[in-house]
Length: 176
Image (spheres, rainbow, N blue to C red):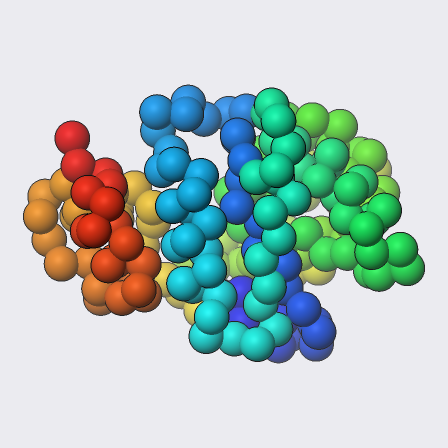
């Protein structure tokens, strides 16, 4: 779906940013950072427009998107920054840290998928009305589905890239 967005907006580069310490998740619920970085690298290797940055991984403490956007603005002066999120996150944007500041730093891109239309759920925040809505291919999978399938011993290579599946199996991730 990232390629769909890159194509639709004619983006030169899509930065993938593994979350350092998401403030809304318990550390026990996430794969170790080094493995999330490795899995991200495996995913992005297929598209030359995709690059990874460790900007959040290198930061101590919780990772807030607004702080990452501010740092990217400083690291890439003059660049137009887009933040790509799903409709589910768009609906919850008002709960994020400093959402209006975030919207002043980036252009928001909302992936319309699974019949959801982000435009129908625009939060009441200054700047949210300027979001780009991009239809993307429907993918009937979630990270929860992958975790359950792995825990049940199912082959997940039809759900996720085989390189990522190999890392999950090798490291014994998502097994209770």
